[in-house]
Amino acid sequence: MTTPTRGYTATKDQLQKRLARIEGQVRGVSKMVDEDRYCIDVLTQIGAIQAALDKVALGLLDEHARHCLLGHGEGPKEPDAQADELMSAVGRLMRRG
Image (cartoon, rainbow, N blue to C red; front, side, top):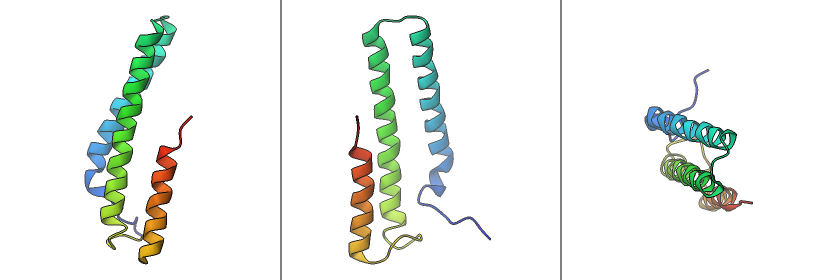
């Protein structure tokens, strides 16, 4: 059995590099907390991490829409099902706090 091609397969290396960079940022914030750094500086870095994750998520969503919803992958083929799936994904991304 072969692994299905996903919308991000072509950019998987780039995606992994971005996620590794974000992982490094999270470790940096942990170190800042260990060092009792100024709260605003820690919050600024957390905001940068959230922005980086948002960029990754939006890229994945774009690739999903182009690959899966336009019929190149294994996603739903019916327009209503496509819209439901897309809006469900957007809704999950927007929920915070």
